Length: 109
Image (cartoon, rainbow, N blue to C red):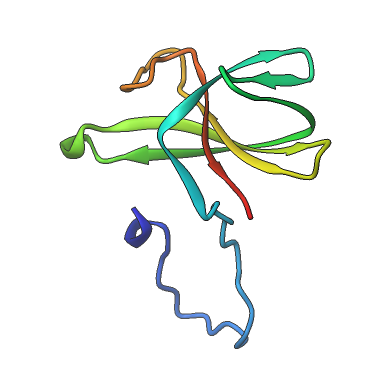
C-alpha cells in the first residue's frame, strides 16, 4: 500500500528532490499476463520480448487480512526500448497467480 511505503523523519530534505522513490509503471495488467523465460527471451501467449537487462528484485508484500501476497518485482529492459514490470512469487508461497510463474504486471511509458 502506498501509505506503508514511506516513513517520517526529523531530518529535513532539500526541496525538489526525491529520495529512494521506486518508479512504478503507469499501465498495469489486470490480470497479470503469464510469461515464460527462454534464454534471453520472455514469451507470452501473444507476444515475445528479447531482454537486455533484468534488474531487481524489489519484494512487495500485501496485508494478510486482505488476502496477502509476497512477490519479487523486476524491471526488464527490452531490445526494442520497452521497460516491463515483471514479478515472481517465492517458491514457498503462492498467490492467486501461482508460486513458480513469471508474470507481466505492468508497462512503463
